[in-house]
Amino acid sequence: MPKPRSVYRCTECGHEHPKWVGRCEACAAWNAVAEEPVLVRAAVRGPAKRGVRAAGLVAPPARLREVATRPLERWRTGIPEFDFVLGGGLVPGSMILIGGEPGIGKSTLLLQAAARLEAAGRTVLYASGEESPDQIRLRAERLLNEDAGAVHVLGETRLEAILGAAAAVAADVVVIDSIQTVYTEALESAPGNVGQVRECSGQLMRFAKESGTSVVVVGHVTKGGGIAGPKTLEHIVDTVLYFEGEATLDYRLLRTTKNRFGSVDELGVFSMTEHGLVAVPNPSAVFLAARADGISGSAVTALMEGTRPVLVEVQALAAKSGYGTPQRVATGLDPRRLAVLLAVLERRAETSFADLDVFVQVTAGVRLSEPGADLAVAAALLSSLYNRPAPADVIFLGEIGLGGEIRPSGALERRIGEAARLGFRRVFGSSRSGTQVAGVSMVGLDHVGQLVRALAA
Image 1 (cartoon, one colour):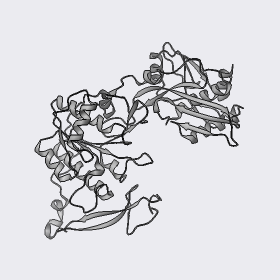
Image 2: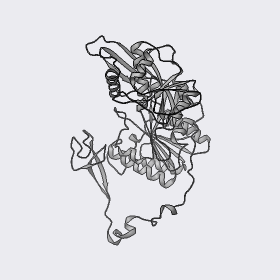
Image 3: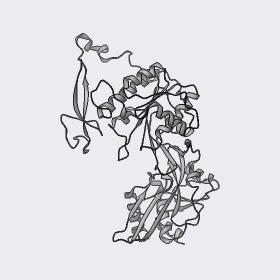
Image 4: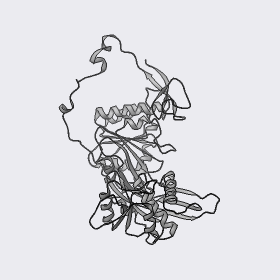
C-alpha cells in the first residue's frame, strides 16, 4: 500500500521546499508555502524500468505534418454571451475553470447552461458540494425561466463517486461546484487543501481527455481576487473565466484570461434579473444608456475586450479639499495610473490639482486595464477642473506618455466603427494614427496641452 508523505510547496510558483519557510526561495512570495500531502507510489522493478514500456509510450512520435487534422467541434450552451467568451461553445474533452466572488451568479449561470444543453440533447451532470439536490431544485424554480428538470444532479464531494456517476449516466458535460469542496480518497488531507485541489484537478483533467467529457469547475476567489488554491490549478485547465461585478449592480462581466481554443480577454456581459442571468448583446449601448449630456467630468472611450470593442464612460470629479491632504480615489482604474496622469497634467499642461480631491470611476463596473483610455481619463479630469462639459459626440482614444505626448491606440478602426454605430461623430486621438472612418472626423492631438486648450475653450 503506498505511503503518504508531505512536502512544502509554493502555491504561486510550485517550487518544493524541504521544510516550511515564510518566504519562497524561488519567487520570493511571502506566506505562499503550504504543506501538501503526496502519494508515494511503489517503484517499478525488473526490466520494465527500461525502454519504451517503462516510459509509458503506446505510440511512436510523429512529425507534425503527418498528424491528421480534425475539425474542432463545439457544443453551444444556448447562452450567446457565454458561447462568445468560450470562443464558440464548449469543446469536448476540455476543462474550464470559472472563478468569482460569492453570490456573483456562477452557479446560476452554469445551471442555466446545463438546462439548455439538456434541451439540446446533451447529458449534463451537475455535482454540487455546497448545495443538496433539494436546494438546487429550489434555486432553479426560483431563478430560471427554462425547465432544468432533465439535468442530473448529485450532492457529493468525493471525486471517485462523482466520476462514477458521470460514467453511469454517460455525461457529455460535468459541472462541479466547487473544486474546493471535492476530495479524493488517495489523500488523507481535508477538502480544499492545496494537495487535494491539485490532485482532484489532475484527475478531472485526465478524465476529460480520456472520455471526451467537457468538465466545468467552479473556483472560489481570495481577497486579492485570484482563484483560491495552487496557482498551477489555472495552468492545468484549458480555459479560465472570471465572473466579475458588484453584487449591488445589475450587470455581471464574464472575462476570459486563458483559452486554449479561442482568443483571450473576451468579455461577456449579463444582466441579473429575477429570472436569472440574461445576456446583453450590445454592451456599449447599455453602458452609455444612463449618460447625461451637458454634465462636466464625463468622457467616453472605446476599450478592446478581446476582439470586441466596448464603449464606456469615464467620470471624474475634482472638488475643493476639506482635509489637509487631498484624496485620490479611483474605481475601475489603477490608482497608480491616476497618480501618473495627474502628475503629467500638472507638469506638462500647467494645470493644478494639488489642493483638490480627485475622484475617478468607470461606469457599470468595467476596469480600465489598457493605456489607450488615458486620454479619456485626462479629458474627464480637465472637464471637471474647468467645469465645462466635453462635447457629447466625441470619444477619446490615446495613450499619454510622461512627456505629455499622445500616442495612438491599437485596433482604431474597430473602436471608431463601434463609436460611429452609436452616433459619435468625432474622435480626439493621436495625430500619428492616420486612421480614417467614413462619417467620423479625426481631431489629431500631439500633446496634452492641446487637449487642455480644446476643452477649456
